[in-house]
Amino acid sequence: MSTCAVLFAKKPAPGAVKTRLQSHLSAHDAARLYEALLLDCATALHATQAAAKVVAFTPAYAEDALRTLLTPIGTFEYVPQPEGDLGQRMEGLMQWAFARGAERVVLVGSDSPSLPAAYIDEGLVLLREKEVVLGPSTDGGYYLVGRRKGESRIFQDVAWSTGMVLEQTLARLGTQTLGLLPPWYDVDTPAEAGFLKVHLEALARAGSTQGRHSLAVLRDLALPLP
Image (cartoon, rainbow, N blue to C red; front, top):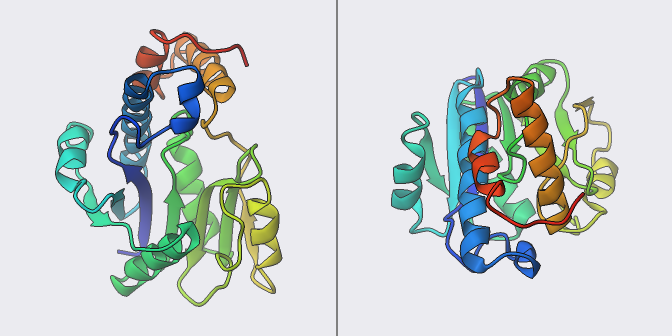
């Protein structure tokens, strides 16, 4: 496999996912929305041209539940996320993919259900010429990160889950060349979920099916305006 795209996924269990939404939603509704986000992100992953399409799951016992959920979308390879903080898990999955023959690897999260599959493909294309690719998110992090095969320190000493993630990752690049994707947004807070609802309504009105699982759930939920 020359290219690999990896989706980070959690088991959509109430109280274990999207806890920042629980200021406006019940734990059950937050988990229901996360399940829909995951379905839409997996749909985008399946639509890419990546040679290997991988779901990296947590906790370790989540594989069967995620296979049941995502099999209607398509065929994926499933692998447990390594131990450690987010940077260690991302680095571990990068090395796992490289060891299996990948030359170019991108990682995406499950917080951007409106993200076009074309952005993931463009990240893999950029890695033909660049050593690292980043898709900046509006919260100061990134919705996509990718690398060519080789050594890198971009995940070391980064303050994860803060607005400094992108800035600190850029500082770790050193002499590595960078490919940059357009900015996009993650959905973590009630206001971001409110914006997602409006954006997905607009996409549906324009004829797009991206985010359709999330929109179906969002239409049932009371969320603040963006």
